[in-house]
Amino acid sequence: MKQHPLHRIKSFSRNILLTRKTGALLLLFAAAYGLGYGIGALTLHGQELSPDAAVPTSAEGNWGLSFQEEGQPPVGNATEEELIAYDAYYRDNTDEKVLYLTFDAGYENGNTETILDALKKHHVSATFFVVGTYIESEPDLIRRMVEEGHTVGNHTWHHPDMSQISTMESFQKELEDVETAYQDITGQEMTRFYRPPQGKYSESNLKMAKELGYHTFFWSLAYVDWYDNDQPTKEEAFEKLLGRIHPGAIVLLHSTSDTNAAILDELLTKWEEMGYQIRPLTELIK
Image (cartoon, rainbow, N blue to C red; front, side, top):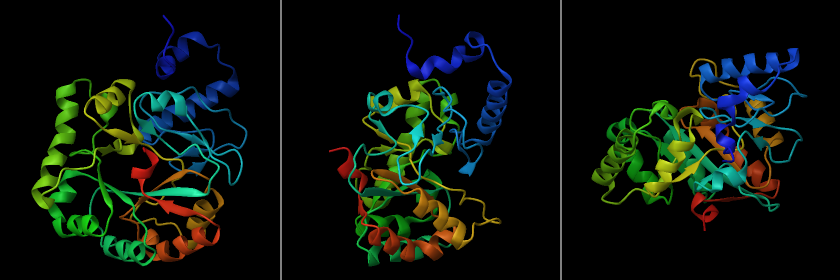
């Protein structure tokens, strides 16, 4: 039987004779797994590693990207064809200057109101992937998101490593508890958009999400914006978010970030000046 690409990592160490260069790459890969976001050839938690390394074989457990040319889409560690079989996406395959703006919200850090103000000013509809406790603690913000035309997506209840969840019962509970809290707050059914916490996934997870009627969204552009006590400067943020923007990008920002709140109005203006249209994720799956 032909081996599915998402299983290749399981036999990686058995089937490849490692050179020193490959061995070094595997060490970086293992470190990335421990940190959560995985690596592409150029990124570990959004930070550059090596400009010449090859993209590692697609890996269950980690989402990673390789940025090979400024202004061009990165290569993911699973292909669009592999992902689309499970209603999963990391970018829009288009040459048109469009992007899709998403925010991950694990807790409130005093920045969401400013972010929503900037989105409203620019008439932008974004997607906020929220955990269940965020809905419980910030019902007014959730209602404002809905009222102003944003999509609220599912980021699980507890923000666990979903790649370690093997049963449909446990997987479904992580999502359904969020759905219930959202419906209690808004009176509406939740849009079935799912983002795996920390980008950790498995083939079985993608299958489960699809069976539950979810579309799974990774990303093709993110940067290190989640450390509260070590926020990037405006210049650092613009270097990544302007230099690496590309047609069809799904952009991941964290709503906890002071920097993101401070720059968003100007960032949206700059993207618009570059000719980009910012569209809701709902248009990507049509």
